[in-house]
Length: 110
Length: 125
Image 1 (cartoon, rainbow over the protein chains, first blue to last red):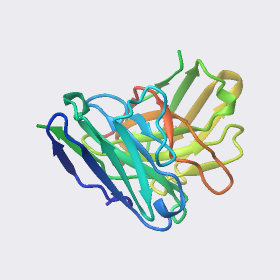
Image 2 (cartoon, rainbow over the protein chains, first blue to last red):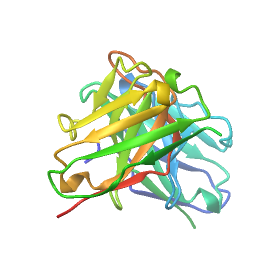
Image 3 (cartoon, rainbow over the protein chains, first blue to last red):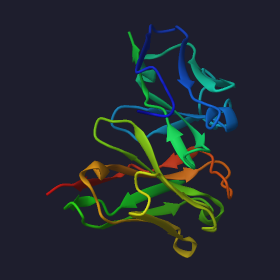
Image 4 (cartoon, rainbow over the protein chains, first blue to last red):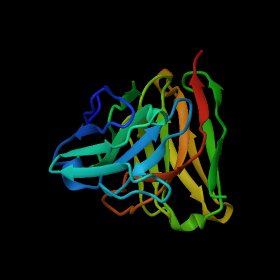
């Protein structure tokens, strides 16, 4: 059971906008930055968003992040077939004194 | 090219030990926090450990505390994970990842921007 709660699955059609939520508590999301990762099948994770809403260079602006209170969201606009992947949120947890990941959301592009 | 490459994985019996290595290149290694993240087969990501740039701050997941030791050698651009008293539940692909944010006496940012391809650790009799 992950400290950060994500929906196990999400889906959308090409061109649509999809959002993935990440729910936590005051000891994690509520008190630190949130990052988001994309993991394509059989590959290493890739950093998509850091510090809640910052994109590393090379990440398309179709990907955006936001945070409010103890929840965070990843939005993907203009959905493409190559966006089909697992997505994870992560942050520091003060109670656990460690980094925590969400359980992951499998995104299917219909 | 900025990269990290893991090595040292393999098959080990329960209770055994293994030392993972991660060789970094293409960036100023001694200015970055380094991390280990693992992924059990078919499961999600699990953070294992972080070590700050000068080894001043070290953190471990509760699941490995007391059994795993992280260390680094800035002269050789490498980070290590010494794993002892291994259990079946430690079976996973172990990733080395560069930290993209801060690491302090109270916390380390969970942003990892460069990942290796991982090294597989299998604990089985």
